[in-house]
Image (cartoon, rainbow over all chains, first blue to last red; front, side, top):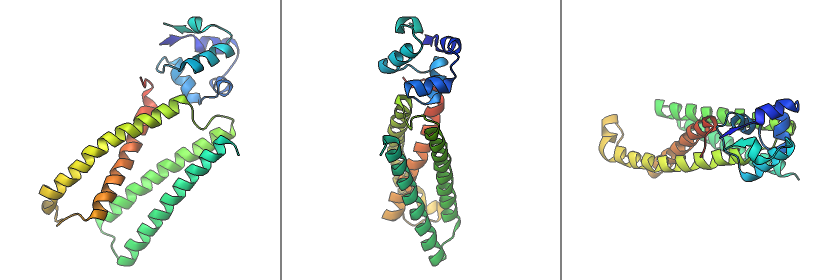
Length: 62
Length: 144
């Protein structure tokens, strides 16, 4: 699934590690999410969208 | 005590038990003067697994100190998938051990496999499959 995590993370000046700490996951999870190789759970998608101040529909491109 | 600390202690205990087990294995083999090629290969593989576990363990401690969680939804998924696949493969592994014992053992100069060798070989095979599949799923990305 494509997403805008990398773009929005850069906009807020967050590293993968920063975002991982904020949503309480490992850095690899953010890496695979950004590559579009891992589909997150609804909770994780919600947490990331909250940190990046955007709706889930806008963050993940279905 | 934090959840992460408890898990780390559990991991450390498991590693400790394996190290103690390997130590006694070495000790018994040394006392019996039983260092044949088969034993040495077996010990080398155990040593490799321990090194692999040690590297992962050190990496995890470092990450926990940096404020990362010890596990998350993806790592749990990797663990479950690696365990399940290793279990499936180990069924065929055990089957192949029994076929080997029945039909091919004498070709390699082995008369029969006793219960200890069979169970040890089966558990060891399971551990090797788990390491292989853990590495595979951890690098795979798409886990759906």
